[in-house]
Length: 52
Image (cartoon, rainbow, N blue to C red):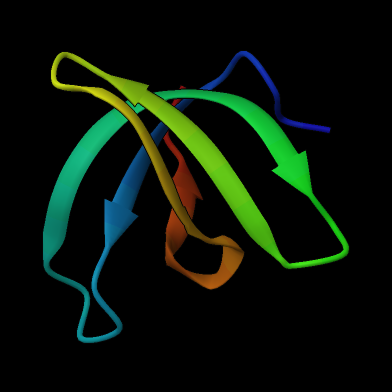
Protein backbone atom coordinates (compact mmCIF):
# COMPACT_ATOMS: atom_id res chain seq x y z
CA UNK A 1 0.00 0.00 0.00
CA UNK A 2 2.77 2.49 0.87
CA UNK A 3 5.52 0.99 -1.29
CA UNK A 4 7.56 3.85 -2.78
CA UNK A 5 6.92 6.23 0.14
CA UNK A 6 9.54 7.79 2.39
CA UNK A 7 9.35 6.26 5.87
CA UNK A 8 10.96 6.62 9.29
CA UNK A 9 11.87 3.54 11.27
CA UNK A 10 11.47 4.14 14.99
CA UNK A 11 12.18 2.04 18.05
CA UNK A 12 9.14 1.11 20.11
CA UNK A 13 10.02 4.01 22.43
CA UNK A 14 9.66 6.44 19.49
CA UNK A 15 13.33 7.21 18.80
CA UNK A 16 14.02 7.52 15.04
CA UNK A 17 16.57 4.90 14.01
CA UNK A 18 16.78 5.70 10.28
CA UNK A 19 14.77 6.87 7.24
CA UNK A 20 14.45 5.48 3.73
CA UNK A 21 12.10 4.37 0.98
CA UNK A 22 9.73 1.47 1.59
CA UNK A 23 10.26 -1.00 -1.25
CA UNK A 24 8.32 -4.10 -0.15
CA UNK A 25 5.93 -5.49 2.44
CA UNK A 26 5.70 -9.14 3.50
CA UNK A 27 2.32 -9.55 5.18
CA UNK A 28 3.04 -13.18 6.10
CA UNK A 29 5.92 -12.17 8.37
CA UNK A 30 4.86 -8.57 9.08
CA UNK A 31 8.11 -7.15 7.74
CA UNK A 32 8.94 -4.20 5.52
CA UNK A 33 12.06 -3.67 3.40
CA UNK A 34 13.44 -0.13 3.52
CA UNK A 35 16.20 1.14 1.21
CA UNK A 36 18.66 3.43 2.99
CA UNK A 37 22.02 4.94 2.06
CA UNK A 38 23.60 1.93 3.80
CA UNK A 39 21.53 -0.59 1.78
CA UNK A 40 18.33 -2.58 2.25
CA UNK A 41 17.07 -3.19 5.76
CA UNK A 42 14.22 -5.42 6.90
CA UNK A 43 12.16 -4.21 9.86
CA UNK A 44 8.84 -5.02 11.51
CA UNK A 45 5.79 -3.14 10.27
CA UNK A 46 5.04 -1.74 13.74
CA UNK A 47 8.33 0.23 13.59
CA UNK A 48 7.58 2.00 10.26
CA UNK A 49 5.89 5.39 9.92
CA UNK A 50 5.10 7.07 6.58
CA UNK A 51 6.54 10.60 6.36
CA UNK A 52 6.22 11.44 2.69
